[in-house]
Image 1: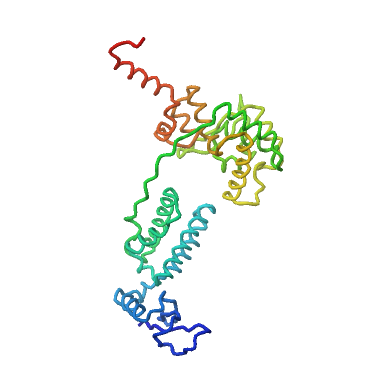
Image 2 (image 1 turned 180 degrees about the horizontal axis):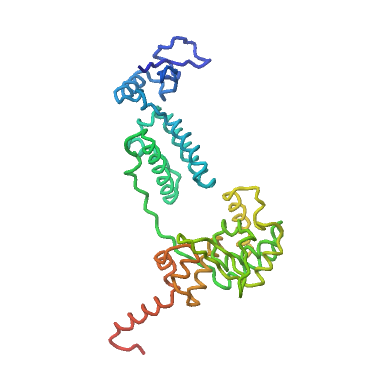
Length: 356
């Protein structure tokens, strides 16, 4: 049985647990296995509190095996995820689930089963400051959390399942021009910060391999290997177990080896998110010094453009970038020579009169 009572604040002159007219918070009590549990019900209105208590009892939320609280579910998920999710990703889950707990507390939702589709849509609609892309990522994480709750048999279905990610407009891929690359490298050489000697090397690593800034910044010298003909950087392993390696100029290999530490661009004292954030701040200064607006991910685009313009097959570029061929064709189509040739031939075939 659920019992509601008023918990008066120190400044309130009333003492009765059943007093109905003050604005002090109302709490709810129940017992699980003989143990007393108390939680705020999220309202100071006695009538509203009674209705919520009756709703909980009507849906059997306090019966054995059905009384998992939102707080316990979140704590359990985060503990389980510590061994299964990357720290940077886990941090994003914690941000989302902390907000879910705050939303639930404000609305007076205590038990997991109180969160239905309507409640989760209301929660999603509270994300007024998120971009469409960020909101889409949070919806994915929310679905994973509730799927985990279903797998634990705490709820029959996921209330987040019907949620649809917002439409995200396609962002144009903008590589650097070769003139801009020259200006960036010159700005790296003139940089006066503590990472000056590393900047040019890191920039050339991204241009040569197409690695994103986070992966490039965590590069270990152990992944720099001398093959029979070239120095290569081992990038990753495909699902088939095949290693993907990218040849680099010998001068770049020597420059990497000359830097201190096994991970020359990372001290090992920060996580991936902070490491990436710090390097992005440095590159913001570099782009300003070079007189252009830019982003480190454009080094990856520049690498892809160079390879495609040089005639490297789309399948090879996709393997190097860790993408599918369809993604490469979608984002880098204007730099695929055979596609442009086919397009030009198709246009010429429609001409009725040869232009002068």
